Length: 160
Image 1 (tube, rainbow, N blue to C red):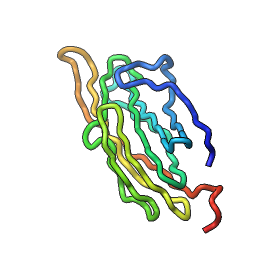
Image 2: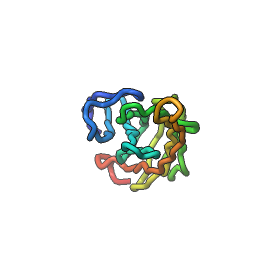
Image 3: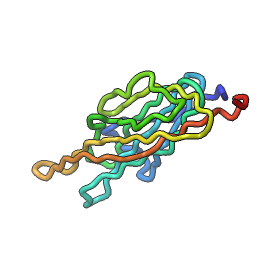
Image 4: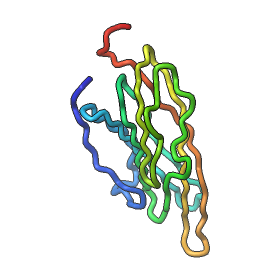
């Protein structure tokens, strides 16, 4: 496994990114075994629903901390993880959850150990609570997004 660390600038919930066309990213820090997933929440003008964008996530062989960081890209939109935040589906054979998921309004974390022999996947849900509008016209809602994590055997591992 590579020992390269990818660096990126993060935007916390409630902050507005510089670019309105910003796409969420996933970052792998193989030195510290941390995967950071940006969860982008946006709302088009004059639309009551929000859009939740999440990049594809792959967990390589080993013990990994996965962090989901919430980013809001629409000015005036208030959003945060709603309980249960990150809800994991059934873990595939060879994947164990060692801690979590747990978190706050802007960050959820889970720790996985991956020893799969072949490619498999793990379904999970993200719940986001949002408030848009001003004054008496504020609207609150909770939106759920179904997504998937792929678990893989490290290609540098010996055949097993």
